[in-house]
Length: 268
Image (tube, rainbow, N blue to C red; front, side, top):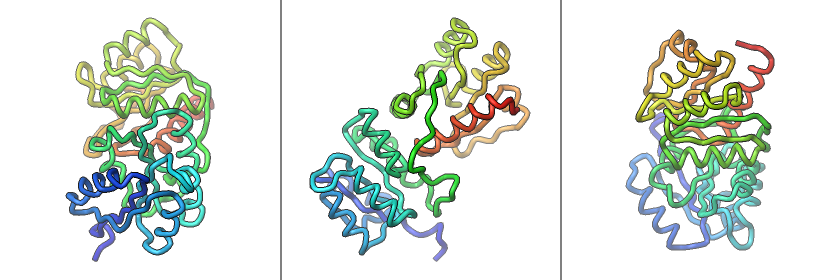
């Protein structure tokens, strides 16, 4: 069997049996996903993982015995190839940053599971490279960033992450509002992060308008996996990096830092 045809083996970790049951029902409908085990807390998760070696652990954050943060640290130290995806009802910035710093590849709110979880699970079937695997700490900053995305769950998640890392963030769901924000505060934003598929003016058109007025302001464009772009088209819009969905939040933080550092160093 080819590696790309193998099922993604999942371990469910949550102290509520009902949550594990619901997640299991949801995921078992997917032909490329296999639930190989369950655990009711972080300590049990480590014990089960020693025996089953899943590809992905879906980890609740607040649990008895050992919580999700500590369990994630142990798992990433002992089994660095195993991906951990945090699932929580808590949107507090502290939980998000601590889970990502512990090694989780993503942090998903339980009320947004249907929209984001399958993308996160499938985002990297292959073993992680040094470039893409979660860092033990995420790069921080102080710059002013404008984020534009009409997918409110993703917009909120990125905003919370960047604020927890020290950035000053303006988050908007409308391209027209974003363009007006740039016009009202020229040279205020150090970076623009915009989704391509915006309902009014698409992200590339928005980037082009901003680039005409402020050519020194870099842009990161978020797009779907199937979108094809011409390099000249991206360059004309001031796009420095293309971030393809699905991605994890740790990757977002590294790409943002890389673009800001390159801009500060005067790189094109």
